[in-house]
Image (tube, rainbow, N blue to C red):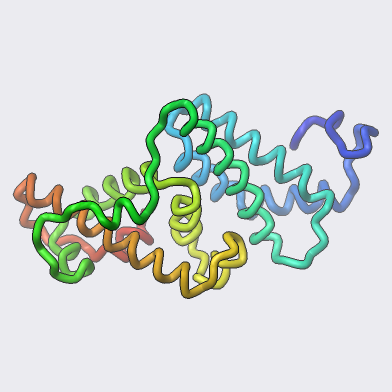
Length: 207
């Protein structure tokens, strides 16, 4: 809980509904917020700072929560807005982030087979490592989308958080899977691995 002297009315006593909503949100979505902070920040100290910033912003925002959207949608909007601002500050300090377009258009290894069929040949642990690497490279809007997908939100729910249409969300998720398959295929080619792993979709959901 944020410090009591930071309440909107300056009284030191948060409104009952605000406290109740925050406790409910923290209980329901606390683990997801930890995962989100981890995806946006590797350094453990800065990650903890980001997580505290997210919780503080969430708590303050709930003073104006009016129930016109689901609490889950509200929590993810606030959390991703804070994390996006954090990522933009990192970018100004020299961290290189790229959009999905740049990754999707990167040269492949000359094999044009469907992404899911290619991914079936790859080691599952290597796929998970590549997925983490891919997420860390994505610019904030695309990182937000894939993290929401990994939390189990469907295209419509992701659209509620991001403002994208469900069709646009589905297209982007498909492209992210394709980029992942190409990345792990390249790794497979260099390592000479022959084991048959799960599909890209299975690895994404197993992360």
